[in-house]
Length: 212
Image (cartoon, rainbow, N blue to C red):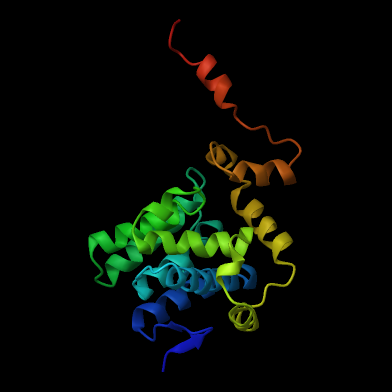
């Protein structure tokens, strides 16, 4: 039987079981429980907003969205979001999902730290951002009832989550600081590393190779 949390069914399929197994093997409790909450919050908000979402695709998007922060999937030359997106895309194609389905999950993960844009794309893209914004930023909590919140947190608790997720972000990005340019991720590096210097967009424009 599928697991049901706060009225949301976690699909009882080989694809979902394998996604859980792969991500659980490479994540600590902070990232694993966060990723599961992202699925649940996202599905709850999608339902409240009338979005029809493929639950398997939503699950893979949520489970892999921070995989790029882990040693198993991290690179040093691109944003962590892209690492997770590419891992999820390959995973889905290996399970026989279509190119478009895999592409939507790629977009969901690649764009989950980009405000507004994912919410204007396919439901399988939007659902991951809805979950992330709920769990990390606490946005629009009123869309999820108190009993639903309590049930999700009973299944996937978040002790000292605010501090622990910030630390996880820092550890996953500190070896590739240049990849945070143009994103909110540079706020994390600036918070933890006093020596970090952000690239300045205005300086880049003013000092680029085009002659005036």
